[in-house]
Length: 236
Image (cartoon, rainbow, N blue to C red; front, side, top):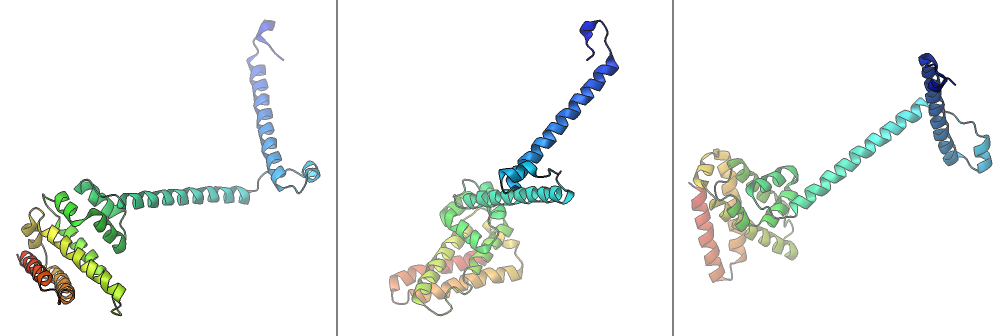
């Protein structure tokens, strides 16, 4: 081996020795990897000792890369889904937080409805005390409307109670919307078709609650007052 201590500094010799050392290191690592692979695939230790160690094939390397990529995608998707579910389960502290969760995490009408329940009508009114965007208002109406579909098709008692509870919640949510800032301006942006959709929702709530409170004059009177006031607000 050439050495600087011998009084001669042979650059070419040192480069050659370095190249040989790197090649030996590469071979050692490659052999070590093949041994590990053989240990996992051999039926016994004797099989391992006599097995012919071969490099990974092109198809094996490709399959490994595909598995790693698929695992990464699945892990990322699960993480995003979990975060979205957690966000939708927490009442929003600001209007910005509500909009972010509403748009990103609540991708179905059921998810949106649950988030409205978590938010509550009172909180919605406070969050949007300055203004409730016209598009968001219509999205809320569409969500509330969607919950009436097949809610009580057979007039079952349990479904009847669910229908009544939803009608009460819808009334409270619509009342909260009318108390948000610049509501008259919000309504003015609606087309005649959109205004009709809202009116139909109010009418459906009216029919359900009036029929349910038929035997209770006091409760019926209070509901009618609220419904009449709601109709007036949406006629602006």
